[in-house]
Every structure is written in structure tokens, then in C-alpha cells.
Image (tube, rainbow, N blue to C red; front, side, top):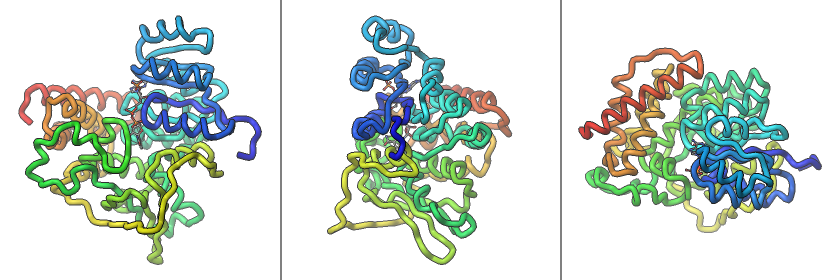
Length: 389
Ligand SMILES: NC(=O)c1ccc[n+]([C@@H]2O[C@H](COP(=O)([O-])OP(=O)(O)OC[C@H]3O[C@@H](n4cnc5c(N)ncnc54)[C@H](OP(=O)(O)O)[C@@H]3O)[C@@H](O)[C@H]2O)c1
């Protein structure tokens, strides 16, 4: 980095997979970045270790009781908050230049909006927030004059492949998907796959929710919606292809037949580091890519194997609150699958039933989005408890 002052970073979800990878980038940055504020959920033990190593000025934890205990043990080291207000305070803390939004799921929406409204640039990993409230978030970012930089490897690849080109020359954007652990499994066996098998992603080590979303390809559906808002693309300009090696992280096809792609070993430190240091690049400790012997396969996703992808395109086309409903129903479905209350194939069935029952139209405020989220969770919960899926 050219500046001598450390760039102040807030990390929402500091104890998760993206959060710990971000702290690894901070560690390797030789002072280019400083973790000023951290927000976690339940893992107060890991948060305490992060306070000791990174000396943030403010941290937030999920529950008040955990915050009281942290104050007793680490209160002299930093200010401590809790709950949604604490996460929002971390997101907008003084001295923070960029907030990394990496809380899992809808819980990230309000703190991410708090960061934007406080004028912080946002490195966005939490795709669910853009799925729920894409137009509102993009408008808020424009209004506050802040940048939303992608952390998702696919969106980072698209961002890098679009750089230096005219938007009018883009023919389409192709998001790559590994296909997850069941790419070649017999279709008849999908109903009975276990949570342990489903979270075992062949290429990436990630949190449980995104790992299940990768197995159903809902993750790619959410990413299509995320790309629609981040890059201002129409749904017909966004396509998905299966690429099991996860080396080409996404591509842009131009009207002259040229493809621009970004390749690297599957390691989230690369896209995280690029978002933090943009437009510069830093050595970040990401795994190197060996070209010799590299094999790259591409195929179209099978709609029978991955019906959730169609649900996401449908919700994007329907617009309004439909993407927020899709997202909330997916969160409930994944949780129900992980706890044994739903079979793997029940994830698709549950989300599609909730979407069918949904009638709410346009959304014009974050309040409308949260109402759609609440309704969908209630509806999905009711369907799970009836055990008809
Ligand atoms: N992992 C990846 O490689 C990857 C790649 C691209 C995008 N993403 C996206 O990044 C986000 C995070 O994914 P992940 O894999 O890092 O998930 P993860 O490992 O499950 O971590 C989630 C983080 O969110 C925190 N959290 C959860 N609920 C919270 C709440 N109510 N308040 C405050 N913190 C809360 C957790 O805290 P505790 O652990 O302390 O409870 C944890 O730090 C997701 O939106 C995902 O789609 C992830």
C-alpha cells in the first residue's frame, strides 16, 4: 500500500471462515491493515483470543451474558458491546475505513446498512444481504458515496474481468460453480445424504450454511442475484456453468467472442486481500496455483440435480420481496436439514412451497424486507413442523 497509515478494518463475523481468513490477511499485511473493530456471534472464546492478538478498539459478541464475561476478562483491552446494536457499532466504528461484512445470513443486513450509512466502504462476503435488499443497499451506497467491493471469489473474478472494459461490450457473465459434493452422486440417493456428507465441500473450507448451499447450488443462485445488483446486470446476462476444479472463479464474455477470466487456487485470502487493498495487490499468503498438469472442465448445470438454481432465477425475475423470501426460506431449510428435521431434497421442496405461498409485492424500505423475511421464516417453520416434506 502507498499510504503509511494502516487502513482501519471492521470485521463482522470475525470468528467465522471469512472472518478468520480476513484476520490472516491482516496478519500477513505487515501493518497495511489494522483490525479496529470485530463482531462475533456465540464464539466468545475465539473472540477473546482475537482481542489478545489483534488489540481491536471495540468488539461485539452475540449475547449480553457473554459480553459481561468478556468485560470481566478483557474489559481493560477494548470496549465491548453485544447483539445487533453491538454489531452495528462495530460496523460503523470511528477509525474504520472499510467494513468486512461476513456475518452469516440475514443477521448481517442491519450492521451492513449501518456501515454504509456511516460512510464506510464495505467488502461484502455476506451475499444474503444483497439478495434480500440489493436495490436498497446499492442506492444507500450511492447516496453515501461508499464502495461495495466483492469478497465472494466469483464476484471478485467478475470485478477483475470487467476492469478496463466498456459495459456495453459485455455479452454475458458466467459464474462458475464446483457442483459441490454430490455432482456425480446417483439422483436417487440425494434424498438420504447426511449433513456430514453435505458439508464436506470438495474444494473449499467454509461455514456450514454456505457449504450446504453449495451442495444444492442455491449458493450459485444467491450469487446470481448478488451479481445482478453489484454489477447492474440483467438476469439474461447472467449464466452459470459447472467447473469442478474451482480454478476459474468466473468469466466475462465480450461481444467479439473474447472471454476474460480470473484464475487462482481456491483460497479465500486472495479475493479478501484484493477487496481490502483495491486497487493495489498485496502478498497475502494465498496458495499458489500450479499450471503444469492443470485440467479445467466445464459443463452446464443439470436442473434435475440442482433445482434450487431455478428457484433463485425465478425469485430474481419476480423481484420485490421474492428474493428475501427465497433467502429466508433457504436459511430455515438448511438449518432444518442440518438438525435432521428435513431430508436433503426437502430443502428445495420447502423453499418452493414458501415461494408459492408468498403474495407480498414491492419493497420500498428495509422494514418491508424484514417483514418479508419474518413472514417467510414463520411459513417455512410451520411447514417443517408439519413434517410433510
Ligand atoms: N466461507 C467462504 O469461503 C465464503 C465465500 C464467499 C462468501 N461467503 C459468505 O460469507 C458469509 C460468512 O460465511 P462463513 O463461511 O464465514 O460463515 P461461518 O463460518 O458460519 O461464520 C459466520 C460468522 O458470523 C457470525 N455470526 C452469525 N450470526 C451472528 C449474529 N447474529 N451476530 C453477529 N455475528 C454472527 C459467526 O459468529 P460465531 O461463530 O461467533 O457464532 C461467525 O463469525 C456468508 O454470507 C457466506 O455466504 C463465505
